[in-house]
Each structure stands twice: as structure tokens, then as C-alpha cells.
Length: 639
Image (cartoon, rainbow, N blue to C red; front, side, top):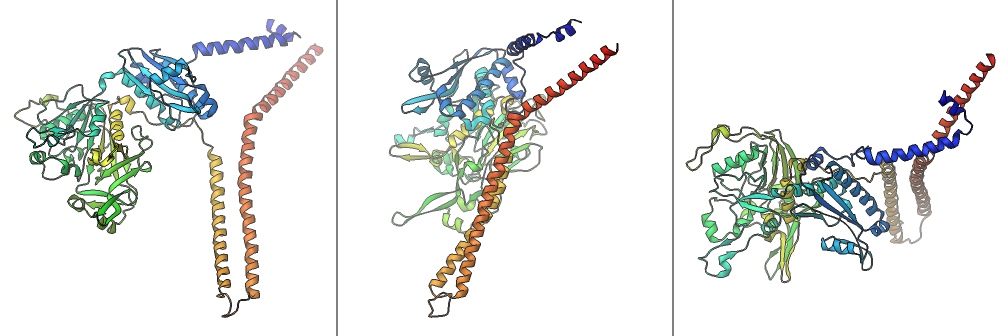
């Protein structure tokens, strides 16, 4: 009764407006305070939806983490791309704060030029982008935990937007689990350097560690595993194996059980390790292997991966230029067994390889999935289709680049140089642990199958780690010519992550592409290109005919006058050329008309459709209400 009287009141409109404003404000207050965690992601690739792995990492945080986000607003004014990306980073970090139950404490700074905030950004090592001459803006993140461990992103690169969740979750995981950064290392190569007190000179007595090993030590604590190791430490979750030759059975068993317990391996194999020739005479005399290859087939064969024995990759398009000949007659040629792999043949969708621009390999091997185990085989680095398999013997002793190039026959097949395998593995020791005099392996502790899934990454070249193959030494110092060290460290960083972190994959970007516009452009361009080629062909034909006429080849011998037939032919072709040019313009106009038509449709739907629908709905409701009033009036008059 009260509601009917209220609605019939002539002065109800201002009250309704006031109630609507109060309802709107109340909804926003409730939304801000009680419904912050409710989000709807309508993007095709779920750009704004956090993965279950990230949620698990955030829920595992035990101590507070401090996040400092630096963003200079002026760079967003200069380039809107930065502003859009900042909005996404900020929203994502706010979700991290909420899902961590405020264990992550986020502070946002605006480091304007010559301010205290800029001093803080520089102190934390943030990378600036120039706004004006001598004036810089910043867009980076610094995170720390209670023990002052620090992780940072010195500048948010929009090209890495698809890996934003992975990068942020890796920071959280590293800070929440700072003791994970310990890796094992198994190798017989002098990666750690050597010292020989019996050497004749001081230079010969000491060989420094490989540069890649020094780089690894900057990020990880390295524990050696060797033939005398009795047990793999329980705190190890990742082991790096380099050039495993004739590995003792007891060590193989340790690796086998390590993987079945969920441990991860990064393995560098080689069918022709050129680095063997850099061993000292003492190392060569103590080496247990008579050849320079390593396959680790005792483990990998049953796990579904094989390194093709005695074969190396030859790639014409990736071949490195090398000097041959003598000092008196030097020359340069392509050495197809030494590769310079560009980013097109490196997996840009993988977290560990997305930022790797180029890699150098030397007589690398070929990895294959032998289908003996139901594992996921994912190639990370591969050759071009202009490649072939070369017998290792042809490059082992005195390779001849010219002969290899002359005998090159492409296989039209991409050959895998590095791969990741994931899944559950079975033991290579079905009868239990091996019997040895020095070990006391308990049979009751033997695992026949994986306790949980694990990940292995195999690289088919050992030489890529050695200094000479990825660093150029000059009088001014050493300069890397490829990302080999970054590649190795990225793989270790990736495998060192938790299962939740490894499970993350790159997502799409928040920048939506106009697929229909692109399709129209491609169709029109394809048609345009065919017409363009037709025109070019006719122009070329026209030029040839003019040359024949000018040289007298178009007429009878000795005559320089153009005949009537030739004149009519030239005029006919000119008319045809005008017609083709007209058609070409029509195609271009059609391209522009189709795109403008689609643009107009999109503007109509975005700007006018909703208001029009609201007007129509209002009219319909008004008519229904008027009809009801009319019926009530008739009923009242009848009574």
C-alpha cells in the first residue's frame, strides 16, 4: 500500500534520483571493501586470471615480503604503452597482496626527476628510460624478505608481458624459499679450474675456472658430486651434469633415484666434445674415456630420450663464418658444423629461453624422442630445415669446412638441439640397487616409479659452455658473442623453481589484436601483391620490347623506323598498363573501404548501440506502464 502511494506521488522523481545516487555509492563502497577478490576475466587467454601454481606459492608465504614498485608517471604521458602496462602490473600485484593475506606489503613510488624517490630507484639499481635530454623515468620492482634477500626487475619490458605472472611468482618463490638456491654439479671436465704443482711454469700450473662456472656461482651455491660421493644431499633438488663419460653404476643409480624422488637434472651431452682437446696432458692421461662423446643412454634411453650416436648437426643457414687457409693466403668460409642459432629457432614461449637472442654451438648432437616412455618432449632449441646429419668422424680430427659445405645435402628437417622432458619416470634398475663393496643401498628404499613428476632438460652440446666458443677475447678484454651463459643460468633458474613455478607458462598479452582487420588486410594485400607482380612483369616485358625496337631487333635488318604494328602494340600495352593501374587503385580503395566500414561498425556498437537499446527499453516499459494505467482506469470507471 505504501509502495503504491509512493509511486503515485507526483514528487517522486527527485527522491528516486537521490535513492539511485545513494545506491550507486553504496555499491561502490561495498565493492571496494567486500568484493575486491571478485574478478571477471573475459580475455581469450585468461590474461588476468592467476594460475593455481601462483595461488599455491602465495598461500605458502610464511613471513612478510616487502615490494617496492617504482613508476614515473611522465613516461606514461610520453608513451601510453608504459601506462597500460603499469596498470596491468599494479592490478596483478594488488591481487598478489590479497591472495597472500597481506603477507606481501606493496608500496608504490613515483620517482620524479631529481626527487628523493629517484635517488631510491637509483640506489636499488633501477634502469631508467630517457624522457627528455638528461631526464629519466623508471618502471621497476624491488622485493625483499625478512633476512634482507633481494630480488628485482630493473625495468618492466612490455615484450615480456606474457611472462609477467611467471616473473613475479618467481620473485615470491625465491624470497619465500631462500634456501633452495643450491645445485649439484657432476663433471670430469676442468670446469672448476685446475692446479698442478708439478707444472714447469706458473701459468701452466693454474688453469682458471670456466667463465660460465663463475657466472653460475654468482647465483647458486654449487656442491660437487664425484665418483667418491656416498650420498646425494637431501637439500639438493637440482643437479647439473656436464659431459658424463663412463659414469660408475653406483652414481647412475643415485641419479636414477634422485629423479624418481622428484629431483631435476640439467644435462649437457656431446657426440663430439671439442673441448676435450683443451685438457692438460695430466687430465688426458687420467681420463677414463677413450673417445670424446657422452650420451648417458644408461638413463635417458628408458626415459624416452636419445642422443643420436656419432652424428652432429650441419646447418647451412646457421653456419658460422670461419677463417681457413694460411697466413699468406687467408680465406673465409661457412663451417656448417659450428652454429649460430638465432632467436627464430629458440622457443620464445618458454620461460627460460624467451629472452635468449642467439646461441653458439660447436658440433652439436641431435636429440630425439624414442617413445619408450609416455613423457612430454618439448623442443627448446632447434636447427633450420636447411640442415643435415654429419658423421662425427668427419669433424673429429681435422675437419675440412670446404668439403663439408660441398657435400651438404639438406634433410628439410628441423633437428632438436635442446629439449625439456616432463612426466613420471621408471627406474633403470628394475632389480633394485646395484651391489657394490663401498655402498650400503637399502633395497626397501628403492623406488621403481616416480613419487611425483619431474623435469629434465638436455642440451646436445658441451662445447657451448667453454669460453672459446661464446666469448671473443681482444686486447681490450673479453666480450660475449652469444647468450650461452645466460642460457645455462636461465635453465638452472627455471629448474630450481618449485613445481608450482615450473607449471606456469606464458600467457597472452593484454593487447588484443583485431583479427578480422588483419584478415581483411592480408586478403587485400595478397590480391594487391598479385596485381603488383602482374604489373611489374608487364613493365619488364615493355622494357624488353623497347630495347629490341631501339636495337633494331624488332624490325627488319637495317630499318630504324618503328612499324605500324609495333606502334599499335606499344599503344595497346600502354592501355593495358593503365587498366592494370586502375585495378590496382581499386584494390587499394577496397582495402581502405572494408577497414573503414568495419571501423564504423565497431564505433557504432561501442558508442551508440547501448544508448539505443536503453531508449528502446525505456519506450517499451513506458508503453507497458501506460497500458496498465489505462486498464486500471477502465476498471475503475466500470466499477
